[in-house]
Image (cartoon, rainbow over all chains, first blue to last red; front, side, top):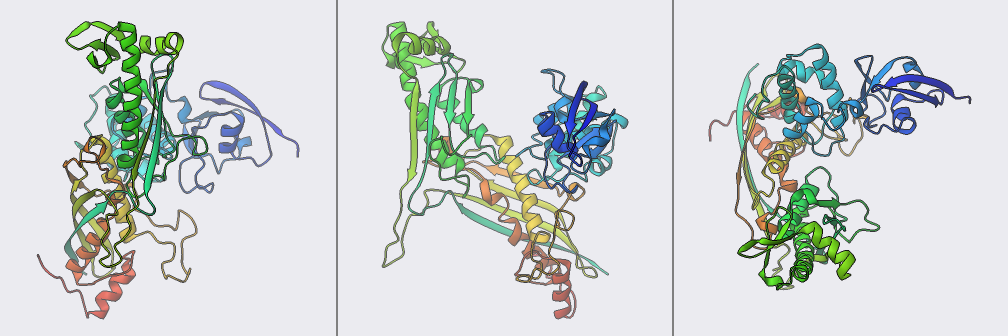
Length: 166
Length: 340
């Protein structure tokens, strides 16, 4: 079958790829664009590991046809850091030990980014709601929720919160 | 409808490692020409922190900064043999192998430095910051990087080490059954507080308190994280997770993550942990490791707490609302066992 040319913005750079009809976005990001940060977990939209932002809105890239991002902007965890400078969410995840095996981390970071981008001062319940579509088998979630709240505080110019102090 | 509060307790002695024909792990350490050290393992880090802990152990033994140590667990085809990451054996078995490999590499590093400084290797010490100096004369020193370069390009010597740690097989005495299958135990005690709704049968864990004795906590934050995450898994096993809810039949079994039940971020339970450190003699820097027992005591403690709350003794997991309600009905109503 003929491949389709797709051009889109991937983390501030232009991506131009030929994709198979019906190819999922996560597949094209990983194999076509070489961005391995979106993880394919369940491939049916129930684990959240593949979460990316399309025009700023979180999407499950395993359920998104790659052709539908033509002309749009896709943000992945691979674009969070500015060179060696980590995004406050990444810093908070590291400082708060919010990852163990790390498989869910990319999706958690992007779900959290989508929240903080439009809500700089979320409540704990809002954070929980934002990551409720993302499964984690290692951490018990609490360090992740704490890390997101800590990153939000830092991004508002407040000092980082201590884990467990929330 | 009444909400019944219950409290349950469980404690555990957890054997570190296993013993089926012996339990070995190997490690290889070598330096790069710029004075960094590579630790090659086949032991897999599943997220429990094996890489972090073996890196710390190698750094401490070599006497070089932890930033200058890399752990490669890439490939069991090409790496030194390891039995695997299971039975809570990683820190203990692999850590001991790393100590031996790193000690041999350190010996060669000190000999190479001694040759450069024209002193006896036994008169040298490391400062842990990347320098090797004459004891009592920190001014007479050479960096680890310079030592590695000299060893590689002048002396024709490797800074490398081999390590293996083996807990040998222990045969059971045919008369008494006596044997020594493991060399050390870790311990824990855990208290669960929960609530049982006698109308719906739902169980909600409200608080966990635990004390873990894991030898020396080589990386306290990783230990804490493993204990918190492991307790979450324990609660999940106790109350939610199953592939055959009507075992051995597959009826009503989950087919994906939508129907495979697990607690989510909205069901976080406060967990207060006390980590007690009683270093084990044969453990690397005393660390036995938390491992599997992060989850284990949670299950019996939940079962005991459900019994305490409503008098229903569930002996099959998970303790679903259906089982709780059937138990309450069989008893002719909830029978709170009261405070113990």
